[in-house]
Length: 325
Ligand SMILES: [Zn+2]
Image (cartoon, rainbow, N blue to C red):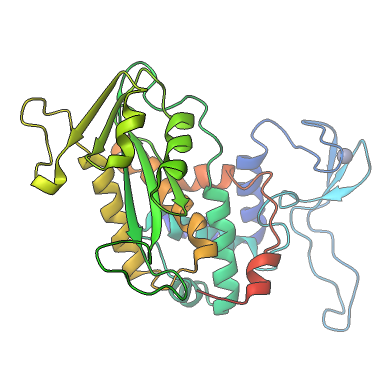
């Protein structure tokens, strides 16, 4: 039986049960009064008021009533799915497709597979990206003296910017850190690769006892002194691993960038600058929950769904901009 034949991908009641088991792992939580594991009455199956379109009303799946504050809610309240009108089982399919496609999935393809409008697929994909967005690092990278690789890459084309000769000023700049020990990464969209943009991120997210690994770019020189060690390789001289110490390199972060770039080129051809941070969240999520770290597609789905909590999103901003890319 394939994963996609699981009932929660096809049956709305089962979809609610599945999401409840993930979101309310510690007991039903009322989003109105915040009581965890409090009394809640199950009203699932109750029909909504009759309307012209549905004279018999529609079945309200997953409906609960809080025994404390008497208010009604479903598991979607307070999550990125709250105001989405698409059936939940389709949204769970979308989560599965997004976490299991190594380079991502386009909104066009999502709309075909789910049989929903392109615009709905586009918004849904952004809701899921928001769920994938990680919080702050609990422990800075390189705690315990491990190696942390830092590098920047350039992607796309800034709106109205002219191509620059011998520079990257017309492209968007992405900075990534990879903790070699845990295999986890953290990605940032920065305005440009200058000192004042890079330094605070490196200092905030990497422990001073870490071994910092970068290329020879001048921007890393002053900051390297703040760490236990600063290993650099001369990419200009085509040296990618230090011959005297083969642990000095930035090959891991460059490998992560190559997946990102192939995905962005093939799937998300025209990503607007205002959305780039969400695409970064998506690639960071898949990289940090990849198979070689022991994560399978189902585990990755659950991890993404855990991230829907407390990230209510109505997408007023992208809608106002009306750029569906
Ligand atoms: Zn309540």
